[in-house]
Structures are given as C-alpha cells and as structure tokens.
Image (cartoon, rainbow, N blue to C red; front, side, top):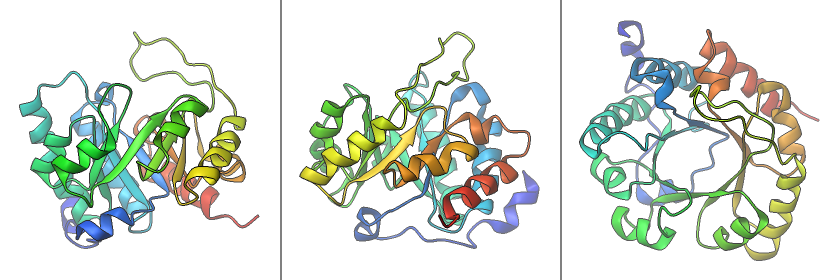
Length: 238
C-alpha cells in the first residue's frame, strides 16, 4: 500500500454537514468482508483514483465484525476516503459512523429509521436506505437522501455460502423513479445487484442517478480499470 500514500490528503472534498446532505455520488462501492481488509483498501484506493473527486461513496458493510473492530477499520477507511475525495457511509451502525466522522449511514431492513440515524450522527448526515420493492421506496422517499434499489440483475454474492440472487430488471428502477417523483423528486436512486460497466448505462436510462457495486470493483484483478470503465459508461453521452 506504500504506493498509494502520496495521494492521501490530495483531493479532499468532504467537510461540513451541509455538504454531506448535498452528496451526489455516482458510484457506491459496497464492501464485503469476503475480499479481506487489504483487498477492500486496495479496491477503494484504486476506485477513488480512477473516478473524479466526489463521484465515489464507500459503504462499509460488515455485519459480523464486532463494533470495536468495525470502528477501527472504519477509521482507516475514513482517512483514506477523505484524502482521496471520496465519501464514506457505514452500513447499519450510526454510532460507528458518528465516532469516525463518516458522511452518513446506510440502513438495511431492520436497521432503524433515518430520523434516529440523524439524531445520532447529526442533522446533516447523508442517509441511504435499501429498497427491495416499490413499497420500500415509497416508505423511504422524503425521509432518506438516497434509495438503493435491488437486486436489478442476477448476481453471485462474494461469499461462496450465499445463494445467487435473481434480478428484478431495470423495470424496478423505472418504478422507483415514478414513486420517488410523486413523493420526493430530489431523492437519489441507485441500482444495486449484478451491475457492471456494461449495464451501468441501462440503469441510468431507466431512471437511476448512479450505481452501487461490489464484485465489479473489489473482485477485479485491476480495480482501477474496472472503476474507469464504470466512469466511462456513466459519463457517456446518449
């Protein structure tokens, strides 16, 4: 990791609470402990270097790690993301997000309410919510800043023990955009589940504001190139 150190603190964009609420990342990189801490760090660094400042949001997701260990790893990722102009949110733990100065929290099923997460982290915290149905979207808009709609395409989780997931198709994004448009036109929608550089543009065309990925970057032998391919797909003019 020594080669990445000169970049730290060179592209800082995160800062005030008000700026956090204005976050509009294009790519959410969801971590998975199956890739190991060093693999995650390398993927985060390379993705951040490949993408313009402010494009990348790292969602630290590790439900099995004890809170002490999660806090330590989150603090490490906070230093890296801040130095490379990326955002950081913590999956399901507002206390850890507050303790490490993360930009916000992602709430999955049963992980609490956006209002409670903001009470812990501050009113300016950026809150994203998991949505596996139109009802989930309807419940989230107006209360959260972003909705991660999934699964869009069939996907194979990083853990060998986890079963494959069937996709809902890009129609799920069209429905989510319609629901959000009625209740909260400013809500951000991200496509999650089997999304690749090749399918990223289809997600935007269906109404997504950006994409969320795991394996596409963390599972790549060349995460910088993988992230750059995503950038090129999202930035392409139709």
